[in-house]
Image 1 (tube, helix red, strand yellow):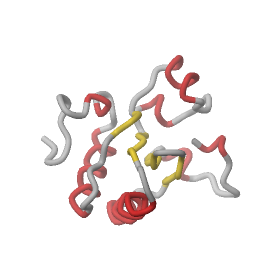
Image 2: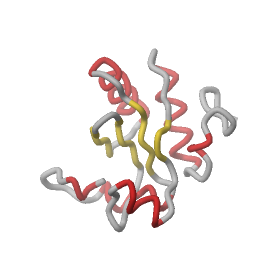
Image 3: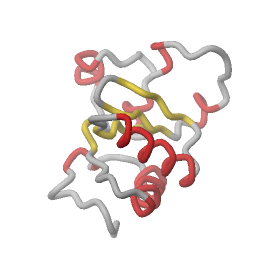
Image 4: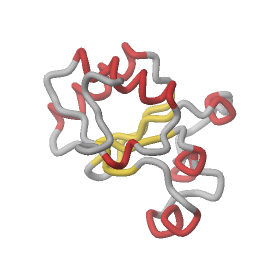
Length: 116
């Protein structure tokens, strides 16, 4: 179904929104960096353990974190995510957060750790 992702090699994609996965697959097609999903759909306990906020897009399958080990990978992931239409992108320690939560996309203002 997706050129760059499958449930065997990428089990963290299970439960993610189909639109999110299509956008992620499209973004990966432009990148020379592999997109490795380190966090996808979370239950409440997983979200608490990960330090996620109460209304995290991860809880709805509308967000994922992609492993990022250096600034070159960060640039690749972010620039390709923008081409694919992601408008909620966060930079975390060791990962890039991508999400398509339409409710959160409407919120504007200073970035806060609570956004993710």
